[in-house]
Length: 210
Image 1 (cartoon, rainbow, N blue to C red):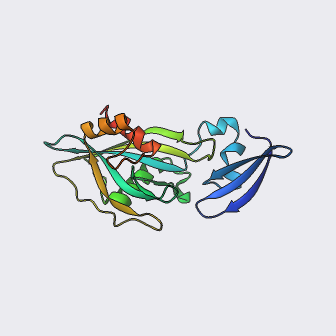
Image 2 (image 1 turned 45 degrees about the horizontal axis):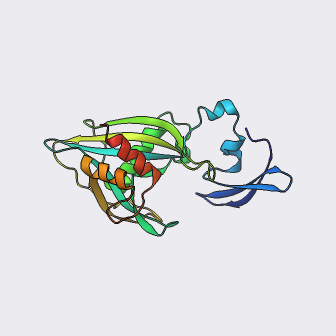
């Protein structure tokens, strides 16, 4: 657990910036989804091992009768890079769900509906792959849970981005075959020559094994 001084530089509803002053005159800046009292750096070591993730990233596989399996990705605009990127359905865990033992799957179901229009049904499968992973712990303490959703249907479900909120901007879907996934992984880029997020890479790797 971090034992140095910490000061708040900026706070907003979804993003905060803190100064971790690890020594006199030494400043380490950290972006976080969390308010100061919930910062991972200030969480006791044992509690860190069971901490709730801040967000959920979904690996969604369309398993349609008579068709090869497809990985479902979004073309989502990412403001920090100014590009549409191949992205997995994902979203923050609501504060009301922080103490919910089913928070990860509940968030995954909600985000899938909002970003793709698909509602999870009894025939589908949903399970947590990893309760929390850190993508960039040198810059942010944001933790993401990885959740697998298999949509098992006789027919392809209808999809839309009608549930997009606020700054979310989408430009359609990409149904990725195993051959497409292999190509993305070999090239490290999408068909437009653009790099993709780490969670997309993880989804591609996972998909190759299902």
